[in-house]
Length: 630
Image (cartoon, rainbow, N blue to C red):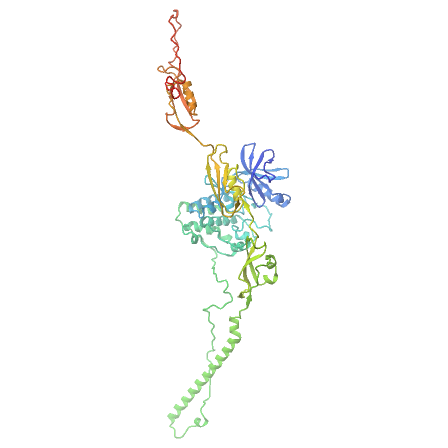
């Protein structure tokens, strides 16, 4: 038991005894408690101390109380009471003995589609009920979905729910968990019931693939992906997903509010249709088709198949005078007229070809000049090379806040423990220092920094002995070390059933992430068995002594029997030699002798015959062996 928590062991309103802490949320701490008025175990949510002094947070806490108190549904954690005890405001809720859907996915991995359909349908029913009351959850995620032992689910933690009728908005808080929030939540826009449907779609995606649709190094990068990226289809990660269920999942995750399911009832109707016919396929119409490409870095560049053409104006006539010498231009008397025409025509054709050749040469020269000085520099600007500075060994704070760096570099941070590098110092970088890199057209170079968190904190195995084993599992889960927890039961004569006997490793031993921890708890005292002895035909007292020797109990019924003397055991309800647990009750049927006759009183004197001789019964049996067998 955590004795450092001031609420452990405390009574609220002389009714609720706080037993242990079972969870912590953004606004409140949840405790396991006992209601002494109704003698039942409940969960109590108490506003955190650091927030209790803030009027805005108290208002939000009361708003949540009013919201969840309006809900009554088998798939929603029930609220029993909303109270205030002195300066403590708290909500009394149904205690759920189970695990979260997140824990179930972590342990099992990919869920089969029937399980995913079963869980999703129940969450959709819970949301339909909440939305019908004007309440939006706004934080649907596997961590807030409890799986009960009977396989049903209950939606919990309406810690950031709000009434649609209220006008209070929180502009300076990131509401919900970034991996499950809708695009409109990521943008800080208007949130309605369809935002819960998007989050349920992400939960279905994770159940069917054991992967989240978007991952990133920071919450901001994941939020941006919700707004602008397209996830892989679930069937690309798990080919066994039926097309109909995949369509429902992706339709729920539609980034455009107007193309998403309009209500939880609409989504539930499709889930029910799929349940009836798993071979069904859904086709969802879109009002505005969107073309998606990945050529984001090709803008402004000349495509490889793009061609630039230059047209010479048609109809241009090039005239050239004959290049023949003057003598040749005058007819020679000795030439015949026909020959003279032929020579003149040939000379004209030659001069035309020469003129065309020089024009082509001129145009080629002009093009080469334009290409070298104007076209090529415009199409292929000179590459600007940048030398990557050495960031490793520097304080991350100095690098990330340096405007000279942030003007050129976009940093992504990754943190890890390191025994040799001080906390906050950069361990490594990618690209490496002193590397020459071309400056992209955007003018920004992406650099990944690995930053030290200092030596890894030492976590030791807590003392879980004498704790209820489920509470012990929760305590280990709260260490956030991805432990592989194995539970097993064994009999114990002194430790109460379901309470921890021992752990492996023992309390105080060092724990590492991913270690396997064994919890051995009591299944109660070991049950011994005995063979039922045969006591039929024995006097009752002798039969009782014999049963007592076998550590058995008995009960007696009597019946009249003219053939068996009074006090003799006629019958036992368990056959002799049957093996039964110790303390088993044996029903003995004992003779009352013959039934009494009601005769009229005799007028004659009673006979003076001597009474029958007394019979002495040896309680240990005439033979003196084995508890007096007659």
